[in-house]
Length: 168
Image (cartoon, rainbow, N blue to C red; front, side):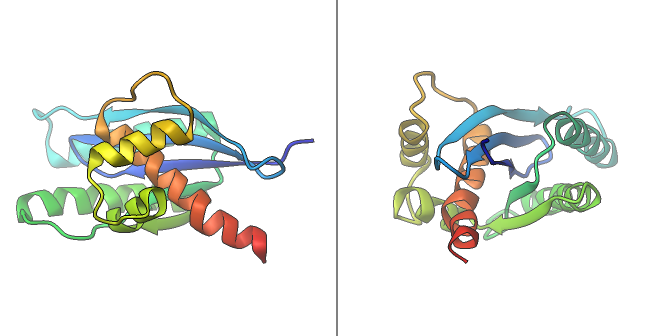
């Protein structure tokens, strides 16, 4: 019997939040993308309404796919203070929902994720996307970048924390 670990990768955002559902087979070390995409909120809504929509959609995804792990992008560095605050608010909602649904939470900076996937923490988005597509043997290009980044978060968990747990 296969033993699967289901991971939800999340790239936080208020306007667009990337998500990915990835299964990892602990016996064969194979991984499969089950679903990926974005949660998009309307710019006409208030910040509170957007956060409420993110929460509702995350709860639906978690209920549907039943992941045991959330791999979430950590805030690392922002040049624009107007961007960091909404992203931090979205992260708060993400972390609360994941905790309320009893998911184990792992966080990675973009630098850590890029390093785990490409071997270079300063890799550009094109290289990260190329490596993810090659790793999962995907024929079709995944868009937008937010969904690719969410897959990257799930893969970061597989490459670092899942493998560390398996060694112990």
